[in-house]
Length: 109
Image (cartoon, rainbow, N blue to C red; front, side, top):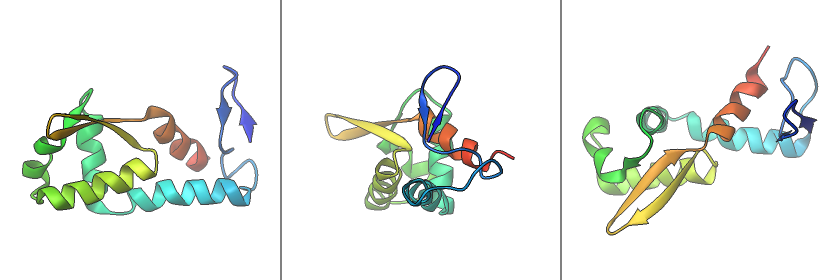
């Protein structure tokens, strides 16, 4: 585990600096596994482009049904990449910047 300059704890050092522990590799694999699907990657980009996005607004751009949207948002949420809040009938999603930063930090050369 690495301590950043601003005293926050980072999961992992860049691959070029040190080996990942087993726990760090599992956490990173969860993130990268969630990002390995083209629909989820597009979905994450749509959510990241706005402060928050309603699930209902993802159906059209992704050309997917609501059950498929729910499946993919669940996977992104389980990986910690997005968080949601239920409002009435719909979920409203936003990205978790620290998880995106963690993925970038691991790949940093």
